[in-house]
Length: 238
Image (cartoon, rainbow, N blue to C red):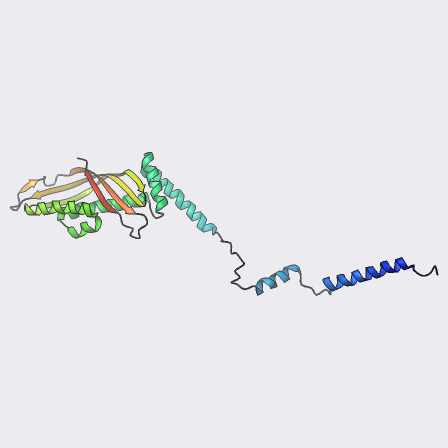
């Protein structure tokens, strides 16, 4: 009987065989043809619907776009520092306007104001109401038109030549709620002669260049689709 296994040993062997069979049924066997884990993952990815709502698409940042945005911000800061001319309040105001309106540029604003100034003073001298109406706030337009009407009633005509600007700079800048408000100090040189009905000169000297100084205030709603600024106030500094 010593050659036979005892009963406890038989029980252990049977249990071991059962466990191995259970593991085989759960895990399967390797045949050498199994796909590696990466291949199985690719197969799952290919069969996943593109519109899977459970998948959160992470935004991709384009390095080139980021670099351009950083260059644009540095350019804006350089413009603000240059055109504020050391005036802290003007610098803060320009920065606030730029934050509210990403299209705002101090340099472009100054260039636009130069053109607007020449157009407005030339239109005023010529009595060109149509051009003025497109550039002026209603209250300012009404004031300009009243002066034109008075001049016409007196029979006066203006011979006007715009020579150029000797200086233009930011005097004030602020963001008032949604409105960007900018005041410029403008120094210009013009030749202006006023003649009466008979053609006699009542004001000015032919060929004489006259220096004039003004403060003009422009306003624009930063949430408006209209990119144009309106002249809302003028102040003669002479």
